[in-house]
Structures are given as structure tokens and as C-alpha cells.
Image (cartoon, rainbow, N blue to C red; front, side, top):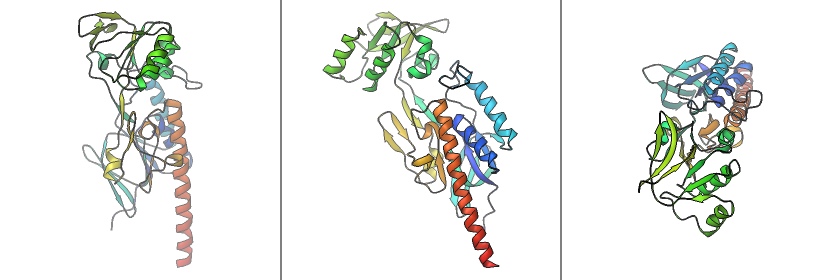
Length: 314
């Protein structure tokens, strides 16, 4: 027989969603542990925004505070990476890189996503600082400045319109994207968005700061920020090992969830960017709380049913 699970819940991922869930579960007196690889997606950013009461806080400072809160309620944080997952009759077994095993009755995947960036030199170096994708996360910081938008997918037109709200000096670089159609060109023209045709070769940096977009023919367009459209890919290796299948999305791939984060795999929930590619810090934290409540309710029902069976067996 396999050993009894050590924890009620293992949370994989120590970002806003995972830590929010851990706090809620621990406050419900659940045995919960968080496995965190220490690679927060928003680490390059100077601040987390649209977060009521903590506007502009450093992402790393926010996570440090969240870890302290989880630990004060008895939810330990295990520094490491979960690399294997197996389901059994009594729950789940996770294997950690470098050795070690965790067992739990329920599993919450708050593993986030990977931003697959355009293959243009300079983009990765400035990602999260002057290379951006979300106007709500970083738009205020570049308001009124020279903004370039690198075309990639139809969503690039929508991004251009959003950033045009923040600045009158916006340049759209179609780069190698398909023709978005007459309506899109008409909108950009009506809003005074400059269009610079031709493939983009690189972003020019000086002393680590963005200076210009450089095209293949050598032309340079001075900019202060560049907007890109990454492909968002959920970190879902564990989910797939458990038999789950990823869902395609126009912007990438994700773990499809039902109400409060339930997935197609019994006993497994997902919260944050793994299940919602557009989730920002505040909404990811809310999703973690909702998933925690659903998991706790599921365990309460299971415990009550077990108590009834135990009494009947006496």
C-alpha cells in the first residue's frame, strides 16, 4: 500500500496565485506546502501595478511579504522545482528536482506561464523595463513618450490602439506580420499613428537603455519604449503528466479551468497565469483565493463522507 499523503494540499508555484491560496488554506487549518522554483515572471519589472493598497510595490518585495504571511499561518515554502507528478488512489505524489517527494490529497497548479518573445535582438534584454506588452501593467510609466509597437499578430493592432490612448507619439512597425486589413490601417491613420514599413533588425541600446528601433535597411526610429506581443505558454508539464491536455488560445496555450479553478483532472486545480493568460497580479491573487476555497470545500465534503463511513463501520 502507498503511504498516506503528508499534506492536504501541495501548491506548485509561489507567485501571487499560489501564495494567496496557501494563506487561505492555512487559515482554514489545512496542511499545505508551497513548492517555489523562485522564477517570478514579473521579476524584471520595477513595480506591480493596479494592486489596491500596494500600488507600485516591487514584485520581489510583494512575494517576500506573501511568503512571510503564508509561513506565519504554518504553510512552509519549499525552494525547488517539482519535476514529476503521479496520481494514485490516495492523492498525488510530486518528485522534486534534486530529490525529495511530496504527497498530498489535492494539488493546485499556480505555475504561471512562459513569455515567448519575438526573436529580435534587444527585446529580451529590455523585457519588463522598456520592452512591454500590457498597457495596464506598464502604460502609465511610458505615458506621453515615444512608443513603438512591433507587429506580430492581429493583437498587435489592438495593442497599438491601447498605447495610443497613453501617448500621441506612437509608431507601428508591421515587421513581418500578415496584413491586418483595410479597417486596421484606417484606424491607425485616423489616430495619427505613424507606420514604418520593413523588417526590424534589432533594438539599439546604449548603456543598457533603449534608444531606437533599427530596420533591416539601416533606418533608425528613436523610441523610448517598444511594445511586443509575446506568445504565452502555460507551464503545464506536471498537468500533462497527470493526463491533462492543454487548450489552444489565440495568444498561446493554457490549462482550461472551470468555476474556481477546477481542471479536467480530478483533484487538480489551476490558478493564475497557468489558467488565465491575461491575469495580472491582483486577479491572479483572487483566482488563488477562489481555488483555495474550492479545494477546502472539496476536502470538507470528503472528510464528512469519510466520517460517516467510519461511524457506520463501528
